[in-house]
Image 1 (cartoon, rainbow, N blue to C red):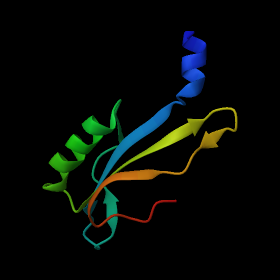
Image 2: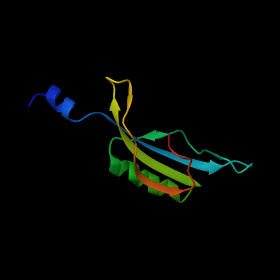
Image 3: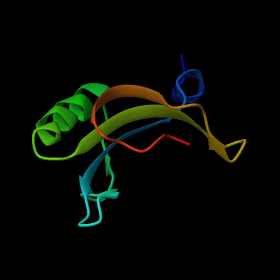
Image 4: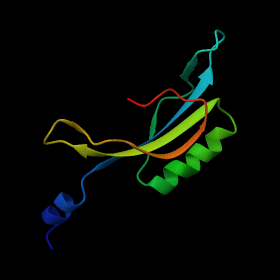
Length: 87
């Protein structure tokens, strides 16, 4: 199988962890910039680490759809604490 065919069989994926803290007014705010990882396992490992430090953590994955100019639906890998609703 060629590399091109393999790339078409496995779309690119966006694998991200976002962590939140609470501002003085109680609102959830990003604790850090979103972090992108290469594997769901690395993402979940970081999310579990941040969960003990932050008000909320969300790790998710979604396929990219460059031909359509967007992304597929997100799949939550890990969630802890308070997090805003995903769009």
